[in-house]
Length: 210
Image 1 (cartoon, rainbow, N blue to C red):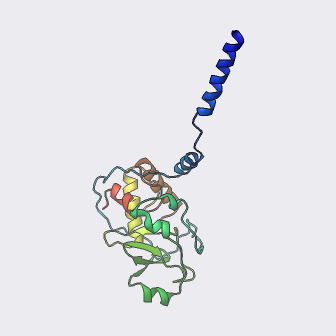
Image 2: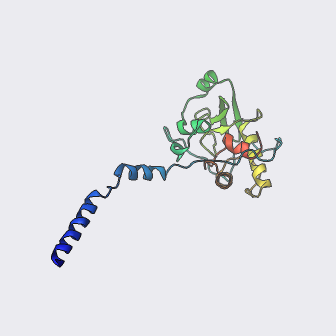
Image 3: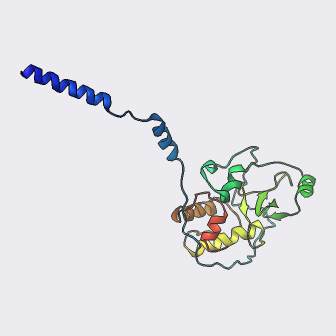
């Protein structure tokens, strides 16, 4: 009788093991991919910030920040995970090199700012690589344009706004260098935005600048 009882229990355990649901490998892969996706929620518009015009030493080549180098077809790190139309330009940005006449014939607005040339396209400023062989760029990527300001004034206003909130402790110099980008990244992280370390529309909205 005891042997019969043990046999019945063993069979019951075997059937339970067979009927147990198998782990979905596809679901595991999906979960792994989701870990890389960051959903930026944001906190809406901040306290209104009035744009200022700063006196910047933009004619002199900066000595305290090293210029970034041109890398053809370089992608902005992490941009593939920044979803939404506000980050489309970051996902698709690739630096291109052309000589001065090409830039002037393809874009109506090309300006000089702090050692480098920038062209305006559909609400964004981009470095015009090749416009001048010895041009200086503290950052290689799009800068969201607002209030009809040139790129150096946009950066200076962002520096000032971050300074007022205790995120930036450097000089207001209009350069999107390592110190400024680190301050922007910290602000974005604290306010639920994608950490682009760059000047984008959601960040300007959060700062109350637009």
